[in-house]
Image (cartoon, rainbow, N blue to C red; front, side, top):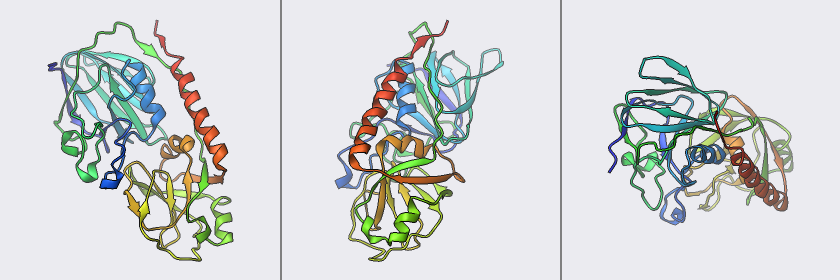
Length: 319
């Protein structure tokens, strides 16, 4: 067993282990969880030559300060993130996202903040030594499910590595920065519960992301959506991206840690291809929505994965 490990000197905001998620358990009341931004998660693992399902550290807004107490590793940080490396000579090096770096015993990674975005990812070569629950190492902190006793990373935690770094080269991947606050949606199962004027308002007026936003849901503020049938429905299953509207008429977009059932009418559902763009928008950002049909959503989903494949194909050695 490898005994290389990091010590957490600052936990950051909402720092958790995440992978692709925990599936086929919603009927037991367990949400899928998993990485919020799948593209950034995938790029992080690809850079350090991990399996695409390997768990990484996900952080929001401010990341952790980590010291490698023992061993050596290679790491990558993805997203739009400001970070620094503090080397063995106590020199501070400004880091660059979407490339790998070597980290030696005693050195530190200080993930300062995301840049006009919400989430970033920290992956190491070989991955972290974690015990899965139901085939996933994703942490669902509201239910204390997953590694680290299902809790967010905290001060003085020790984070163990599966192995020491063996790769000599460092790599970079070219990632285009995308900023888009026009989000495509499908009509929801209770779309007809809302007045004609509200249906039009939903896709013609802006909604601001409120501060009441986390991995469970994104509360929006804007024109009140008028329900002309009933503000409540019999509880039914929910998927991420569902846009439910409670009695106050202000939409809530349900995210990865969403409840498994809910009783509010759903006016729309964010398409999978636009989900990464949605979650990287920060509170205070104005969003707008556009209805599309299922066939277009399916085509966008195929294109989304084709684009990720093209991004990964840009991986090259740093000379």
